[in-house]
Length: 83
Image (cartoon, helix red, strand yellow):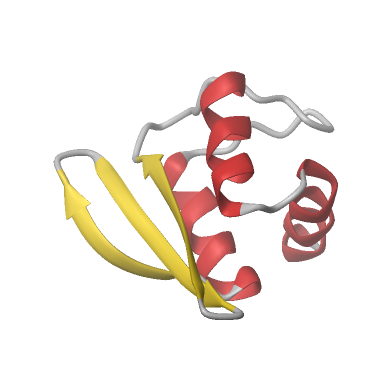
């Protein structure tokens, strides 16, 4: 479970933050996985996030890597959201 600052992220929470703060849109849901996409400078950035209650650390970081979002940026936004 990704415990970054003692915070465990769910798939649903990860998607909400990507959509609201990083400009992604949900384009497809298949089973328990959500595909999010955004366009930057004419290229598509796509990530897939499983809708698990708690994401494994590798899964969480892989989704952020595909989204081209650093862990630090994500945590800053997530911590602001909690306040």
